[in-house]
Length: 413
Image (cartoon, rainbow, N blue to C red; front, side, top):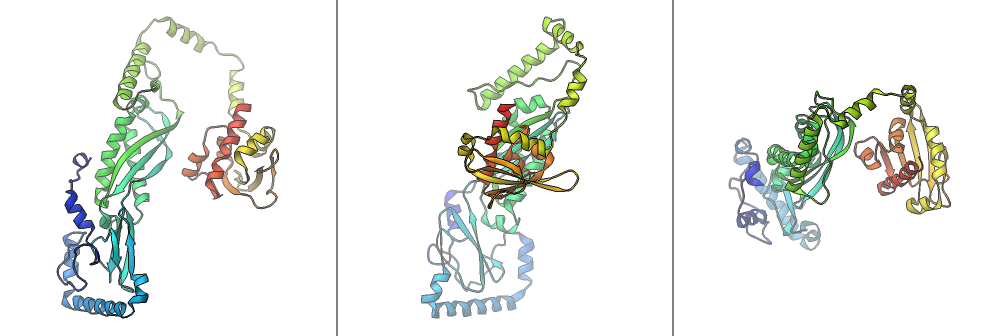
């Protein structure tokens, strides 16, 4: 990974010695009163600014540190509870002493000087976040809803604290921008067939941008929520995407998708086949009532109609699966707000306008259009929450159980 993304491998022994340079209780390190030059993680610019302060700054720094250390020794039985910190093996502690950063401390017992030390813990374990699904336009004009799951870890605690304020938010924004740029150059067929390879390329691109932040992205997995708009038709016919082959993973899955994609493209380009003739015949015959049906299909139900559709599917089995009461605040297109309740905590369940009796377990806030998409199955509750279209006050786990209600409504239709 480091060879591909521009990182340089650090020997394990040197890395451990650097990370374990604690302040005297475990491991060797500089003392409290060391006035030698320190390496600035920000480079020569930081060293120049620090050296320009002169000896007066270092003398003041040493005097204050000595006084605080003496105070801590005098009051040690009490100050020891506040000055000694235990750092586990998967964490490092970044300490700012009178504004100057010190080497990462830990693992083990770390001694902090009261009043002049400010510290922050950095987790070195692999963490994960997801890029919320967003609408993207591919090269062939298809509109898709695409998200991603990203795993990363911190390899330089100092840079992760100094360079960026919110590490996860900055990395998520970087991954989303890289994904939008990369998928905009691919057709829908290429996105289906080369999803793993696109994820590997995104991994390298993201690492190139985030290596100066002290973190490394280990894995990027693209997740396609839905195809919102099919691609534009080409002279050879509409682009067909090959479905994934069960039981195959990795390179074998890519080869199978590429093979079937090529087969579909060749089949679509062969003229005069009976299937092509039959397809043309069917496309020319259009029932007279088709426009009216299409117009009716485009009509979306209102919030009151959706509530009326909820009541018939309420049952004891659904109450057993969900077991919670919800208050749904809907923002109408006119700007007004309307409240509804769905009580799935007892009996066979109830639904109606207004607020539920007692305090609801979860309060949901969303627009009327988003509610329609949820009920019609075009939007999942988790995707709506991650994209900011659904606001949740209360237990998120209970809020996601509403998907069982939407599934029951879909089966009834």
